[in-house]
Amino acid sequence: MRYFFTICCFVFSCGPGPDPVEFQTDILGVNIEPSPGIVGEEMTFTCIIEDSLDTRFKFIWNIPNIDSAIVTENNSLKIIAKSTGEFTGGVTVSNEIEDQEPVSALFSFSIANQMEK
Image (tube, rainbow, N blue to C red):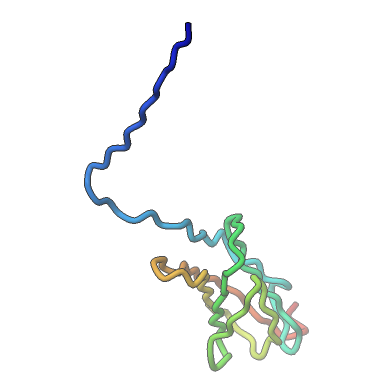
């Protein structure tokens, strides 16, 4: 004797809901080397983001004393320190997906003269 079993699955919907949103990322911090920077020398800004497999991220950097935002496809930016002082910069991270808002963070850094180091 053979027995046949039939399994039925039903999917119910309770009406339209929000479209699923892909995970963007979070900015965990910005590392600055050297700290403080020295006038005339190179400084490196590195944006630390939450782990992600997304490779489409763009980093938009706003650094004082630079006329316009700088866009990079990796998480680091190198500049030559131009003047002494305490500064606040910003970075925005976007993966250019239409339904997602970019995330931004502010960071502080200082630049000193050679002899102040």
